[in-house]
Amino acid sequence: MDKPRIFLTRRLPEQSMKRLQQQADLVHVDLDRDPTRQELLDGVRDVDGLLCLLTNKVDAALLDAGSRLKVVSNYAVGFNNIDVPAATERNIAVTNTPGVLTDCTADMAWALLMAAARRVVEGDHLVRGGQWTGWEPLQLLGQEVSGATIGFVGMGRIAKATAKRAAAFEMRLLYWNRTRLAVDEEKQLGLEYREFDDLFADCDFVSIHVALTEATTHLVGAKQFEQMKESAILINTARGPVVDERALVRALQQQQIGGAGLDVFEHEPTVADELRSMAQVVLAPHLGSATIATREKMGSIAVDNCLAGCRGDDPPQRIN
Image 1 (cartoon, rainbow, N blue to C red):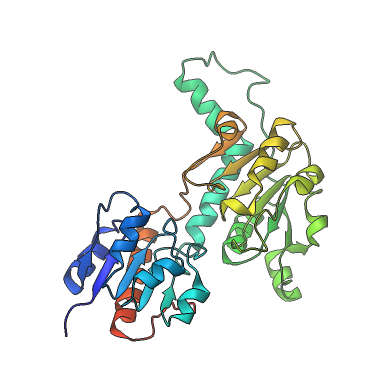
Image 2 (image 1 turned 30 degrees about the horizontal axis):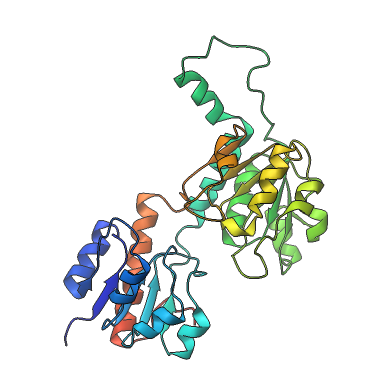
């Protein structure tokens, strides 16, 4: 059987690249940057599979350009970059890489929380800039984490993993989820349920953990920031557009909330100038899954999905 033709949009970890090179007729442009729209349209012509990233827009026009496409394999857990109904209409499988980045993303949420609460980045800049003159009683005072109250917007796998970390700090755990958990699971995790509009006022920290959909776009905005404490800190490791970024900027400028730790942004990779200038905001370049082991696992799953779809088999992680 001839090797399947697969268009790859970016370089993957080493072992995944080797598998693709050995088992597929690999098509690509410059693997060290995102392809342009025209390069995407040209790249999917006469290929069996597309292995892409969350940053690649896969819409109906692109799917039509790929007249031979059998599968779109997304190297990500999310898939809001893909028009899934359009792919389904064209009998094209869409896949993702779930279940491998829960702990590393929860770790990232916790790293952002700690860094923002204890002003670690500000302290780092102070020391590196040669401006530190020694210990002072009032220098860079931050927020207490142990015993504080954290509210979770969404309670999926990553939120539950983050909640377990928060429990180790003896925090009070509040949450809202579209579907409330069973009472036994709430007790097991030490969670207290709140209606969405009642979640924010009591929280010292708010951590975002919902998928990006039409319903969750700008789910957290001006109304929620008005409800939050002036000292509260927002953490987002989910998707940037879940938070109304302009409203967040205004809330920070007007000191309605105390700070933020952000791994995702509304218009990635563009980050608002105001956020980049604020000392009380910790910024990370979408590092939630950025561990060697996790990225290797994601690559392995994405390749498995793509090869299976190209063969005409049902991919292991098909979402449609």
